[in-house]
Image (tube, rainbow, N blue to C red; front, side, top):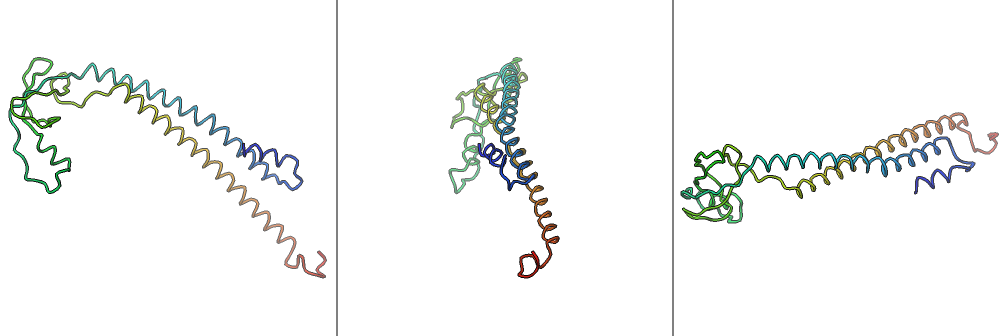
Length: 200
């Protein structure tokens, strides 16, 4: 709106310079590009990211399996940490040696981080790949949507900043040109401009 009023204000102003009109038009073009261009690029980026992430969700859900593990024994605990709230100390109390069966039927034995304090013989579930290796939980559709929205917003903000940066560069160049012209005019007017009896 401000850019539009700038264009309108300089339309018939007798004091307008060519650079003033260019600056007003550049501001209007930048505003239109930010409103339409940046948001469109952000929307298309978010949509593309969402499609790719949903494919990842589908593949991960096909390749990862929930398996029951049985705690064989607790791993020996590390010396007490002075800060009981640190994650390393909490995880050390939950490290166990456990057994599970891979999706291909083979038996597995390995060290795991239990999701809660457990004792020998207790069971909990983990995610594994097709060969029985422990993997992170697969991404869900809500997480994919959140990441896609963040990607779209980040892209739109980045494009908007690039457009605004380009506008500022153009305005800076226009200001340099104005100052150069003012210097030329002052040199033409001479040192005596405005003095009584200088003929100006």
